[in-house]
Amino acid sequence: MTMRSVATPIEDEYAGIFSKGMLIAGAEGVTGRAHIIRTDTFGNTLSNVTGGVHVTGNVGVTGTVASLATGAQKTLLSRFLDTAGDGSGGKNATADFSAVTAIFSIQPSAGAVYRITRLLVSIGDGNGFNASGYGAGIALVTGIQVRVQNDSGTLVDLTDGVLVKSNSGWGEHCYDVGWNEFGVGAQNEIVNVRWTFAKSGQQLRLIGSNNERLEVVLKDDLTGLISHHFKVNGYAE
Image 1: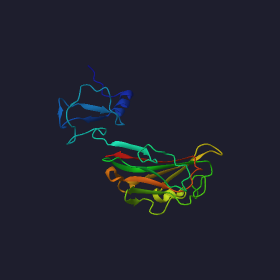
Image 2: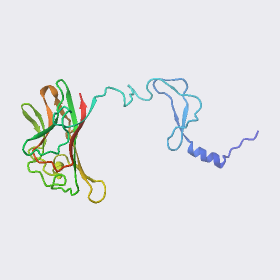
Image 3: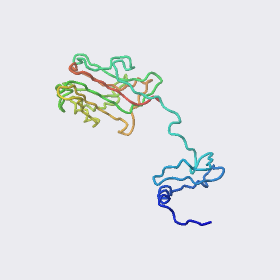
Image 4: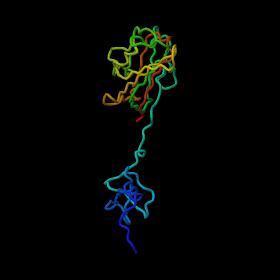
């Protein structure tokens, strides 16, 4: 029988692609025979491997390997601030609040605790937004306060006495302010604001039994706006 020692061009091509191998051996908890698992030059495992690799327990690591989707999960919190604080009140802040102050808030019930990671603000109006106005109108007279409150008073004034009077004014507190115009010409516009409390090092923690709540306080005429919402993300402990 004649032995052929020179590979054909086709064999050379496949040898280049399927030249990598990974030997499973010496891994903790591996029973049976160790086999070479062939991979191509991109690291993809080939499907036509003969034999089998039987793995029990952990492979190549100590301790427990757990799926990222397992374990205890907190209840997700994704809710608009409203005039009642419990989700049952009005959520669109577009009325005249210059005579009677309005407070949009979220408050956990007694025994519950909320961790608030961020506040999202959306301001919808006609065209003509600018940095110095609020929506497409002029700057607010009094301004908007954001605070953590209980029945005794203000625990944290998140706006620190510098109230939000303009579209760009939100950026003084949270930096992330985006302006969007969908369409061409005299179309409605929107400003989106993202205030990520977690970026300051921790979330806001509201204890329901202490009547703690996150509040947005409004004292201006906002009837010119088309939409005006405040939404929080976080979780319940």
